[in-house]
Amino acid sequence: MALFMSKLAERIRRASRTEPAPLGFAAAAARPKAPTLLTIVRLSSNEANKVPEAVSNGADIVLMEGIDASKVSDTAGKAGEALLGVQPDKVDRQRIAALRDAGADFVVLDSDSAPAEALLEEKVGFVLSLEAEPEDTTLRVLGELGLEALIVPAPASPFTVRQLLSLRRLSALAHTPLLTEVKHDAEASYLQALRDSGVAGVILDSGAIGRLGNLRERIAALPARGRRREERADAVLPAGVGAASHDHEDDDDE
Image (tube, rainbow, N blue to C red; front, side):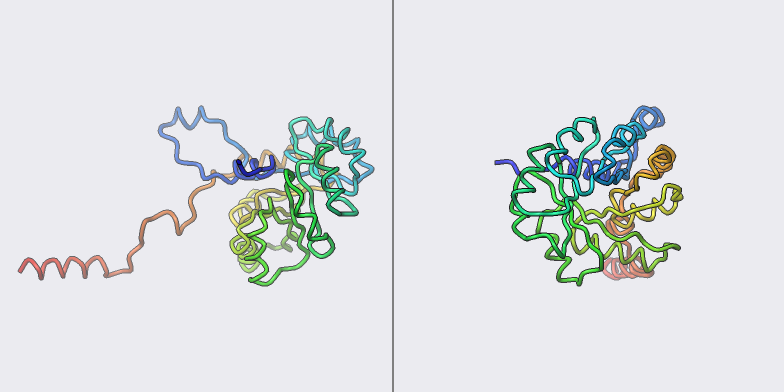
């Protein structure tokens, strides 16, 4: 039996894919450039009327807060190609099943309050919201839960190397993509730094829907994902090692 993969997980995987270098100018021009960061618009339970606006402005995902299953079906119908996620006020396994059956692709859970049994529900994606940095052991265990993503607090401004390392620690130890909130006017260099630190999607509140198009343009203009430095070369020899190797070969020849 094939393992279930939510649509959110599929889109994160596509956005996070390392792009090989195209062969020739024509190939580079012909290939459509997929966005390397997903855009998520977060709406409150009384803002379902803004779903079409979010979609028309290019939202990849609409995240509804506090909505129940009775409203999910209608909301999902307005989302079009965008995915629908729900962060419910109350969580139990039955509510998760109802949200899934109504059309939610994934559910956002709070790590401190959500009952563990909720994760037993199948054929729905799970995203965990973290308010603080867990210990290393906790992060490693998170990686075994099969979560689609972790929502982490937005880095404070300015985005320092220390904060970059903190994000990379979360992503690397949990082996899970990150989602975080950004401002609508986030600069391209900041977005690229987030992306290269393990962030797969950025979250905007409803007030920024009108600026979403500009943000998507900056994301589309980011350089393609490349292999990280430690993956680019098979090996980087310390200075002198190559010369020493040749000296040994010369000795053998003599």
